[in-house]
Image 1 (cartoon, one colour):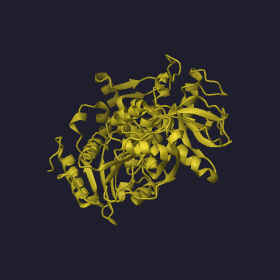
Image 2 (tube, rainbow, N blue to C red):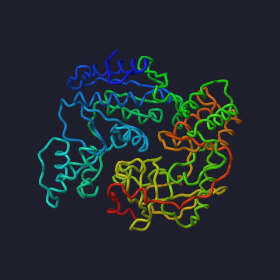
Image 3 (cartoon, one colour):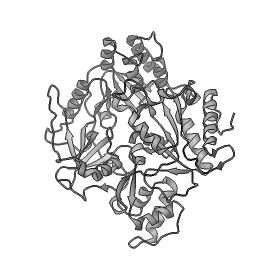
Length: 509
C-alpha cells in the first residue's frame, strides 16, 4: 500500500492506490514527486463512490494535497496564469456554489463547473498584478495603486489564493479588472468532481472534452438528476473504473445523523420504524431533534426540505406571513433560489457574466435590498467566492391554489428567482447546512404512495438525501406547524463579505 499521512481504511487505501496508479499512467507520479508532460489523446475516467461518511471527501482532500506537493498547479475559476506546455494542472469542481464552498471550508480550493467552462477575461493592466501574485512575474507598478494596496493584495493572496479577493483587498471592484467571460477553448489536464451524482449527461460530456483525466466522487444512494431515468453518470462506467467505499470512516463513527442515513439501507425498514428510530436518537443525542414544528428563524438561512411542491409553497407563504412581508415587496434578508437566467441570445455575454458570478440555477441567495436601477436587486450569493452582486431580477413568489406566481417587482429580463425559505429535496442536493429541517409529513405521503426509484422506495432515497444535508444538527419535523420568529430578518451577518461586484454598469432595460 502507498504510504500516506493518514491511516486509511482498507477500501480507502485500495482506492487511493488505484488512483495513484492511474495518475502515474497519466504522467503524475505522487510516490516519487515527479511530473511528465501530459500525453495527448489519452482519456481516463475513474469514479470513487460511497455513501455519506465513507471517506470520499477525505480521500479527495489528501489526493489534492499530494498533487500540490508534487508540483501540480491548482487551477481555480478566477484566474489562470500563462500556460506552459509541460505544466501539469488540477481543477477541483462541484456542481453548485454551496457544494464548492463546503470543500473550501475543508481547505480544498474548489470552484463550480461553470466557472471552469467559462473563464474570466482580465484587463491587461491588472493582469500584471495577477501574474505577480501567481508567482509568474515581477511586482508591477500600476497607476492609481499604492505600494500599501499591493501589499494588502499580496498578504490576502498568501492566505486565500483568490485573485479577485486579493484585488478587492487592494481596493478594486470586479468590474475594474474583469472585462468579460469566454467559453473555454483549450483543454485542461486533471479534474476532480465532487457530488458527481448531480451531473447530467451534457455536463459529463463537457467535462470529458476539457479533462483527459477525470476523477468523480459520488454517492449512489442520492437522487439522480431529473429527466435522466434514475441513472447517474458513473453507473455506466465499467466495473474496474468504479472504486467503492463501504466502511464508515472512524471520525464519523459516532455521528447519529449518519447512523440514521445508513439505517435506510435495510430493506425491511418501514417508515414508522424509521421515525421511531429518529425519536429514540433524539432522546440520547441533541444533534437529532424530533421536532413538533418548523423553526421559522432557521428558514432564512437553511431552507426547510420538502418533497411536494404544494408543501413548499404553503411553508413559504407562512414564513412571509409571520414576518409581516408585504405582497408588493421583499424584505431585506428574505432567502431566494435562482431559477435560471431569462435573456435573449443577443445578451449571451451578460448571461455568462451573471452565471460566472454565481447566479446559476439552484443557487441560494439572500436579498439585500433594491439596486440603484428599477428592477435591479442587491444580492448575496451563498457559497460564492465573491458573494455580493447587483443584478436585473425577476422575483416570483408562488401562492397556494393559484396558477400564476405573484411578482412583487421585475426587470424586463435578467436572473429569475423563487422564494427560498423552503426547497424540494431534489434541489437541495449538493448543498449542506449546519442545521437542516426535514418536513417528515411529506415523506410519509411518499411512503404511503409506495413509489419506487432505481429499485428502492422513494421515501428512503428522499430521506437519505435530506438528512445527509445536515452538517451538525437534524430536525425531523413531524407536524404541520410553524413557530413564531424570535427576531426580525437580518443581513448584518453578511456585511463582512468582500467588496460588492456590480453588474449595473450595463443596463438590460
